[in-house]
Structure formats: C-alpha cells, structure tokens
Image (cartoon, rainbow, N blue to C red; front, side):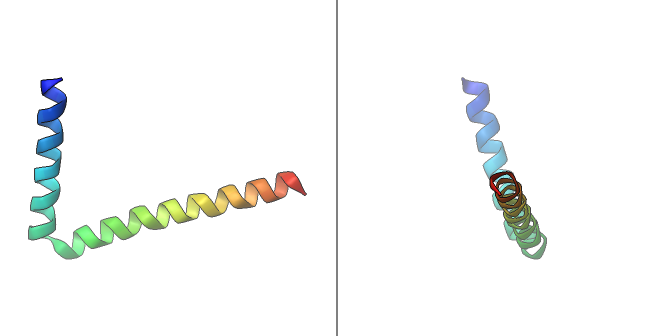
Length: 53
C-alpha cells in the first residue's frame, strides 16, 4: 500500500513540475488526450448507429 501511495505522489509531483516548466507542451498533451477521447466516442457512436440500423 505504501508503494502505491509513493508512486502516486511522485506522479503528481512530475505533472506539476511539467506544468510549470513546459506549459505549452502540457496543454498540447491534454488537448491530445481529449481529442483522442472525443474521437473514440465518435467511433463508438458510428458503430452503434451502424449496428442499430
């Protein structure tokens, strides 16, 4: 349990460090993740509309 907590703290610290040292790249990474989620949701919508019609 302790290892999981330490890894979580290290990950959070890395994200905060990355945000402060490279904000433009961090924003691009977040935009990329959201774009991927939206694209995946659109693909699922196409799949289900094709199955249901």
